Length: 237
Ligand code: 6PG
Image (cartoon, rainbow, N blue to C red; front, side, top):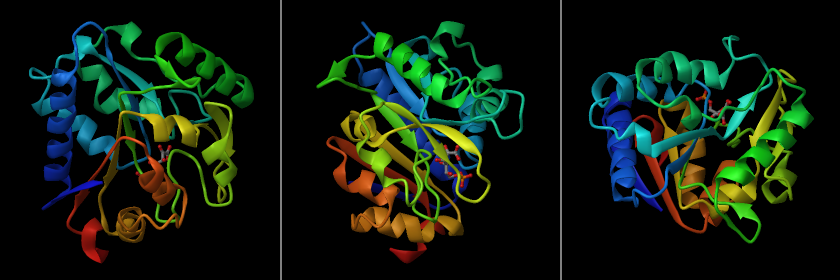
């Protein structure tokens, strides 16, 4: 595991954007780089800076965006991960429409999980029946969750499905979530953790102590795992 600590949230975001651009540039140009994005509030600044400061240096035509997880709400809802990404990044860049493959949070959750999985299987290469993303960008919560796999839902770490429906324990909001195996098999798993509230989960991920779903992923991922964090999130390591 490689940990990158930066002075503040913006510097952390910039370093992560530069790393993603490097990975895209290193990739063979014969096929697209398949990137699964997380949502929540953490990546909003990074998405904004990506559009504002790195638009011209990003080979957008080489990138295809998918989602790690989506809240079961329409794209216009303020809770929508796609909506947040659209407002901060997608509406400001020249990415071909077919390179944005969203989870339709407005659909029936179980049917949408099955539909999205089937769509992903037609677009991504597979190993042992598992679709392989080039880059999976993850956030985490201080309760230890990642993707939308919350403590108590660890069965999703080993589920047969590629996407499954989970429930946010406090609000009861349903989510369509990428399960553990495709995350573990991804070529690059990258956590973005900023702010004081991420200090415990960051320490658990680095300890590789299986304390919760995020730490489990950090421990068991088969390929490169990187953590991008700011100093305050890194306060407990
Ligand atoms: C989501 C996510 C989720 C997120 C964490 C952290 O839909 O909520 O994709 O996995 O990364 O919940 O959320 P914050 O960035 O809002 O703290």
